[in-house]
Amino acid sequence: MAVTLKTPLVSIIILNYNGQRYIAKCLSSVLNTEYPNFEVIFVDNHSTDGSIDIVRKVSDPRLKIIVNDRNYGYAKGNNIGVKYASGKYIVFLNVDTEVDSKWLKYLVEVMESDESIGGAQAKIIYANRQHVWSFLSSINPAGEVFLGGLDGKHVTDIFFASGCCSIYRKDLFERVGGFDEDYFMYVEDVDLGWRLRLFGYRIVAVPEAIIYHVGGGVSKYINNNFIIFLLKRNRIFTLIKNLLKYLPVLFIHYILIAIVRPSFAVSSLKAILSALFNLKKVVRKRRDVQLQRRVRDPQIIKLMRKVYILPTTYF
Image (cartoon, rainbow, N blue to C red):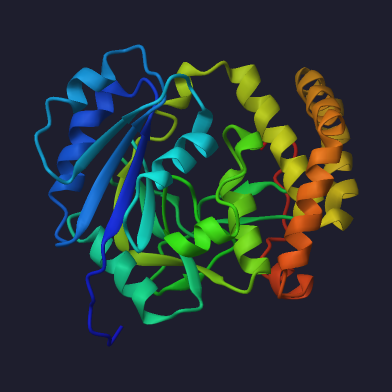
């Protein structure tokens, strides 16, 4: 891309929850990033594994440490980090990652090249360096998430930027309300990307910006049934807020999954009941989202995938 690279300040937010074993590699790779103007905001969600002791041993003026009084989840934990961010851009980076030395340069270059780009995602490769974990992030009408994608060669429009490694304009992130904290964790990145697109901004994937990701490195410390519940409930939240007409597709999807895999019936029922309990609040959020919209649904729907992966997944 033939542009002159500017170097605005970037705030890299690394959220941690019991990720002790990943911190040293993650911070070392980030602090050795070949980009001259960034700060690192390390937010700890009340870890109990000694994570903070490791971070406090790192002596670098670019590093800020925020210790939360409880585990606020991905959404609120990162929103807290944004409050301490001074950059024009904010990056959300999982702690179980390592970054290529030029990753940030390429992300910023793309963001600076086009004001219509509201967010971007790096190419996320498994830690074994052999396969793509996430690049062309998308969803289908039932809200199923597709994180894979072939090894792209060009900057490409995608539906949303994976929360594993994404960059946003800070002022825009705050203008649309940041991550929805009622999600706690999971699918909040889809919801954010959807809101940005409704607001008229693009989300793109940047193939030159490469990071390496363990995958599930921190979520393994969280009860699996709770994770499944959050995935299912947050998909309901997202469709209510952003595209109500596809909600019946999601419910049919849940019914079919319950038939084929009865063990998922309870989590589906809990998700639906929780969504109903919170319906008034979610509908109020839908009203706010729709009032901001500048783009018609067909322009966004064309970025969805029309294939389904039922019944092999609950995501």
